[in-house]
Length: 208
Image (cartoon, rainbow, N blue to C red; front, side, top):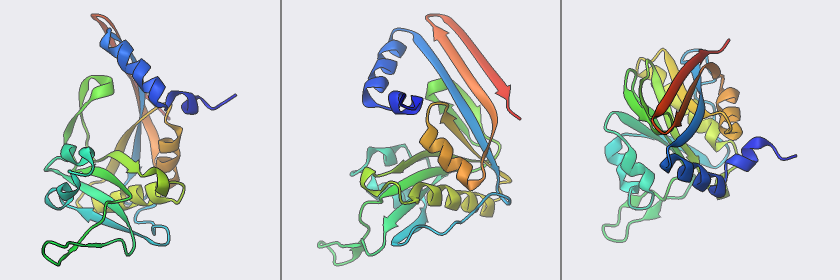
């Protein structure tokens, strides 16, 4: 029998979920992963041929035209990006070097920020650094890039004074869970949200 995440993390399942949500039916469970910034496997070396860079919003938004996700990058976040080494392109308009598209990225928030978590339909204030939007291009997966990105994010958060680093991961998203666990994150609590029409229920369950 296929693993549950292989059935639920598909485009078809996403469309079904969105259609039910539009009709007032939602059921979401997300694990909140936490790592100590000084104890996790921070700043792990990236795989051979990959360079990891932490970019401020102004620098990172040059990728916005090629990837809509960068339009979501907040001014109080950092984009941690992975590039294939030697992938710089020549900018023919001014002769200067211009970065090729990143093969992976994530967004890292400063400690104490508040985020609206759409699946939970709630605002959540994160006491430490917050990792979100982890993405690796399909052709670059299974090389350890996601792990290297999360590891660098922990290191950057620690340098900026964060004692902990957090991430919210859907309970059926095993690939993301494996990534965070491999860097030393643990599940601190599970956040659940259910809605049927006007009826709503929220629950936060601590995990040992």
